[in-house]
Image 1 (cartoon, rainbow, N blue to C red):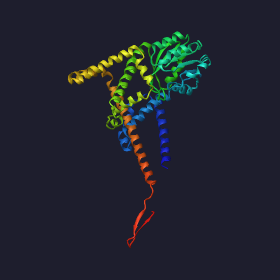
Image 2: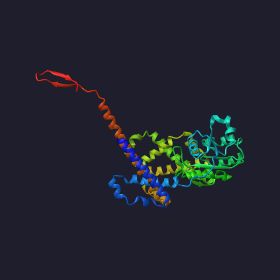
Image 3: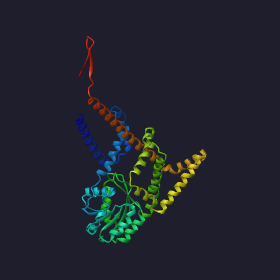
Length: 392
């Protein structure tokens, strides 16, 4: 009975959320702040946490921006995904199939069929790990029609784009989705676009990404590779280093989370997320170019210099370093605090729900154990001093 009540309430919520998203899509721009306000008293009366309301409002606003955007009007294309059985290849397969395109997959064991899978394709999208991308482009280029559009999704652009331009006479574009496996849609996700040749041949694909809520970042391959030094290589190295240090020190991560602040927990989540990925992928991102390796070396020097200040107990110099960096980061500081606070609130809501769920499971488990216990004999004392055992 309780489950049925919940189902009815959930259906009502879904219907109302759909109406709310539709109203947002039809209305002029309404700021998040406007949507957040004026309901504080109502939320308290209803026993609804403010963070939950903010998450709901934010979700509706983002859904309105994508779900109700004009439908991409495009004819079905024949697409071959090279490496399509990998995680990112699978993501593109789902998105392209859902949009009505015809998908073929060329993976490691399919090269005997390469000609049939590649020659008649409108688009060939290379979705293999960085270490194999250039070799695969060399291998497949001879099968391509001059009208076939060729693109990749690797995290290095300059050498890969140059290779595609040299090996293929038709349309060429280099893309870099700035997200990893596990993402369900392009919503609010960035995709870097590096033009090569014949951009018009890719417009339908770019429209599909934008229609699904993605944000296209147009860049030269040189600028992309420079930005990825900070966005990928240095970030991977700092997270990788922290994970290695924690393992070397044999830190009890599970126990540390009992004491953790929200920020520490988020940090541990990021470390765990990195080490859940493919080791060659993470390492190759750090080693990919000499510029990345040099930047990581400079970071290590900075770490060592600051560590020496700590060892020397040089408080004044450390405060000076903090203030100088504060000035450097000042422009984006408000946004950083706002976004990280939102993540903390969202994480707190998730953890609270998981805690309730765990307590309910423990309660049900205890009740089940009690119900299944054999009933112990009950001793009754008779009036003349003898005892008998009876079953309740």
